[in-house]
Amino acid sequence: MVRFLDTTGSIVHNVLSALTSITNKHSCREYTVLNDIATALYGLLKPVEEVRYIVSRDNLESIIHTILEAHGVGGHYSEVLERIKDQRLVAVSTVFYPLLVLEIALNPLEDNILTNSQLVDINEYKLCIPKLEYLIAKLISMKLYPYNIYGYTLFFTWLNTEKLDFKLLVELLKISNVNLREVVSEIENMSNYLQLFKPQKLEKSLLEFKSLVFSVM
Image 1 (cartoon, rainbow, N blue to C red):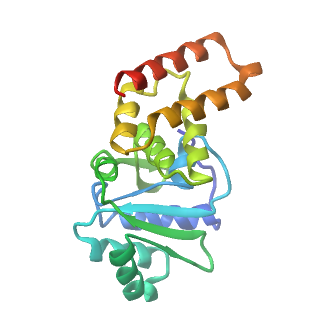
Image 2: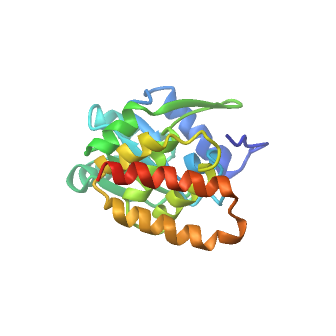
């Protein structure tokens, strides 16, 4: 994982400080953070434009209150709580932070993400992030740009490392109800663009992944 260097006074410091405050009050089964923090920790480095959370429907009021207070937007609590209960997802525009997005875990994939969320220590910061396979499956299953691209980018980043559990990833994609044939097609199309840089071992990894996908279809 990538370690941030000196972040004092930066947006990254503010966000990680907020995450630490949240982690001190809630477990990783109650919340986890997705992009742009988790994706960065797995190697997809980009400006922190959005801090997106999945939160448990259990103890929802307390979790939402803690997150908003940690990000300095506690005054929006009543409105955010009403909207997230009605729409399951809400975006909160902040002045000194990136866009803050919260969504309730309501399907099997998101429940699994929270169940398997892991605690990470980064210098003095503490935060909960999904395990890699769960993050990739979530991002791809969103079927929205740029999240799906983040998911595929992480897939190719870790494809040849022998640290990506293909079987688990396929199982997660299956319970997310994505079209597995479309996922394979997207991966094949992207693989073609990487043709000039693709070692033989990467080709073998892709074949292994596709074989697992077709075995569950």
